[in-house]
Amino acid sequence: MNFSSPNFFILLQFLLLVSLVYHVFSFDTSFHQISNQTFQQKEKIANRLQQINKPSVKTIHSPDGDIIDCVLFQNQPAFDHPLLKGHKPSDPPERPKGYNKINILNDNFQLWSSSGESCPEGTIPIIRTTEQDILRAGSLDRFGKKSIDQVNSLAHEYVNAQFRDGGYYGGQASFNVWAPHVEYAYEFSLSQMWVVAGAGEDLSTLEVGWHVYPQLNGDNHTRLFIYWTADAYKNTGCHNLQCPGFVQTNSKIVVGGAISTTSMYNGSQFEISLMIWKDQKTDHWWLEVGPGNLIGYWPSSLFPNFKDHADRVDFGGEIINSNSKGTHTSTQMGSGHFAEEGFGKAAFIRNMELVDHNNNLNMAQNPQFLEQFPNCYDQKIGSSKEWGSYFYFGGPGRNIKCQ
Image (cartoon, rainbow, N blue to C red; front, side, top):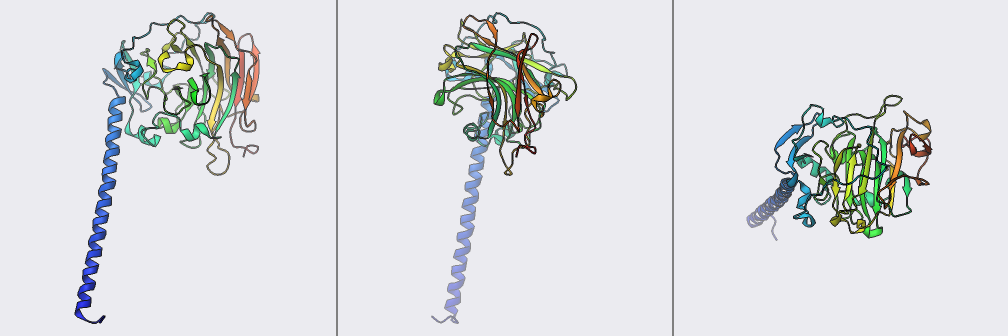
């Protein structure tokens, strides 16, 4: 071929033009594909938000940034569950014998109500879900749920008092409330009660406590939370009211709401009592936060494993250790101080009690303790007339002995 001929240069220009048009077309096609995927994702998120955020009769702006919608009881998310269509609301249950109605919580124990605003009777307060809340979860499917990677990995670290003799119909304790440091947004620190039935793929849990969980909540506030699952954290259940399931009856307390008061090191202490128990007339499992404040219930139809009783009840602390930099996290458990420091310095759970088949509250005795990494987080058990069965727990995480 004669590379100096005019025909060669014409051919070369033609090939360059074809190549340019091809790349422009390919870029344009890819751009439109990405744009279309983005649009579809935004549309799915918008549809989910419309499902979750119910019409409200009143809206309250909380000082911590939450928007609280006062939703009519019958319009709450719970009744979107297929098993709860036509569900008849349950009457308040009989409380367990031995129940002591003391230390009633201040009406302003949550930040949202500190302005004096409240939801009308016949409504329940629900935190409005935003697009950012869903985006932080990583996907629509995982929104409101515990990460499967976290559930199945060694990243979870516990200090728990475990009661595993079986035949439990509930539990109660008072939980010392703190604001622990959490190193990374995808880690958390909590103190809670687990009511558990089944095992393996059939594991079912009812959970309540306080936590600091930036990825879920978008901040570092200490918050009241609940959780449930009927299939070992796979497809069922969620935090708070972020999916259909838990039926709320209380108009004054926000499930998932920020707690206005936390304990101070070597200073004033704040605690909340939490109780879960079975109403043996309806088989529903009820939740009470602070004596006298019924919050609502988990309907029995959602939990085949809870038809009779729970197999175990646990109380304790939990953190996520992501080991992100090859060292242990500095996420604190409890107050961030070891159990040996005692009252006013270490976190505690006291007056641990269990509900028996006769609906009696009995002092929880002879716990098994799960203490995985005592150089990071530890416990110290005790009992007394005033505090019943109790233990101190917690720690700072990463330190010279915890690497």
